[in-house]
Amino acid sequence: MRERELLLKDIGMADFVLTELALFLDTHPQDRRALEYFNHYNRIKIQMEKEFSQKYFPLNLRLTDCGKEWSWGAAPLPWEGECA
Image (cartoon, rainbow, N blue to C red; front, side, top):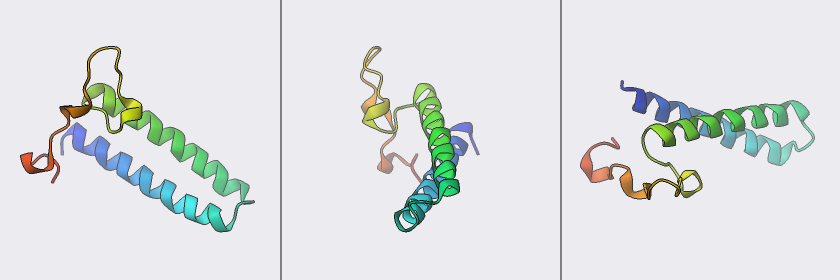
């Protein structure tokens, strides 16, 4: 697997963990340990998204750096076979 696909996979795993922790925190809002885990994985995911966006293309508009050039549309489209 290429570096790009590995990084996308890791971002997806961190996103899954964050979603599960958010659901848990919805029903256990006082659980400090779960909140610490959420904050930890959120920092990791943000860093991975920044790294990916700098190397390849932005994953969301928040990570688009307009100082250089508009790169939001640089990602491969699903019908180009890159997203499978």
